Image (cartoon, rainbow, N blue to C red):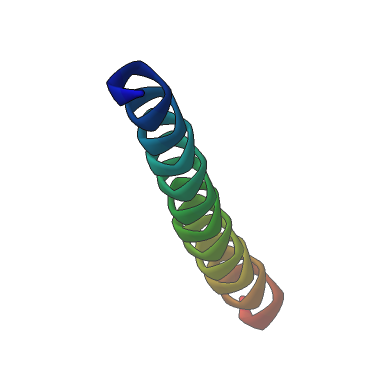
Length: 43
C-alpha cells in the first residue's frame, strides 16, 4: 500500500509543481512581453 501512496503522492506533487511552474512562467513571460511591447510602442 505504501508503494501506491508514494506513487499517488509523487504524481500529485509533480502535477502541482508543474502547474505552479507553468503559471509562474506564463505570468512572468506575459509581464515581460507586455513591458517590452509597451516600452517599444511608447518609444
